[in-house]
Image 1: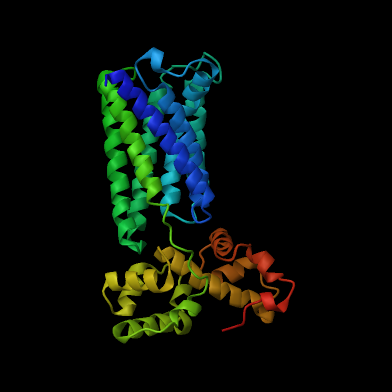
Image 2 (image 1 turned 90 degrees about the horizontal axis):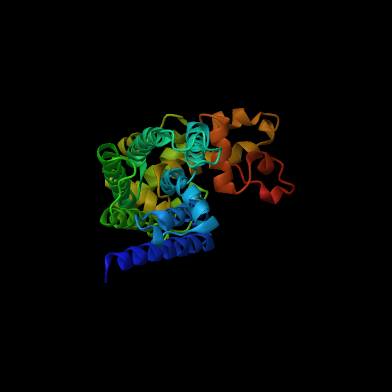
Length: 351
């Protein structure tokens, strides 16, 4: 097998794998949310693969080749969003994340001549490199910051691995661009580059396929199942903290606070909330507790005239926006629709 054959095999196999994973993620209701970010990333990487070879005869040509070269420049931002969405069930591109992503798309489009030849190849690739470093730094900060509340051991390890793999890959590419120039790319290097990106994307997508069933929206319902010995004591302690002491109403509550008040090792508390209650992150558990409180307040006739911001703050949420996002994720509808439920049966009983 010569190097040209290896080049074609790696790129065709990679494109096939990416598109297949996009279909699998989109077909499973449990992974459809992340498929929204994986699918455009996969399409952009396919475009990248179509042209990432130093052999002109092996590149996709014609209009498809032009389109592939254009969308290849968008892969980084969709990869960024996909990584963030993979570890945050409430992730949506908004604020600075949305602005940075749109900036990348605009600069990449200009760099590839979409806005005319005046801006094409005018050093904008270096602006993309600088922006890419900032995006990677933000991703690393988010993954490491939220790692303490991650209740799944495999996911906790994956957070660090994602940071190390992306930092290593992008760091190596940056050094090559800096030392050898943006146009340097011998055949062996491009094959290795293609394989590395694909292996990373495939690994991250594959670990999402066996997503567990969604957690129950109510802590009360699942915490009262039979338990034995120390586990029964911990379940009861957690029930008291949530239903009696209502610790979740503190906006600044974190996982370390819960561990300290539980009086048990951190690993034990993680396994309890994950295995017994079905939550994969402390934020999901906390939101379930706060949404349960919000449901109680929304069903209380004495609070019928209260604004939603008052309900949000009294339920432990720091803002109306975070309240709306969490409520929608747990209940499948916004709090305003829940408040105006047409039948009494749709309104939860007050604790």
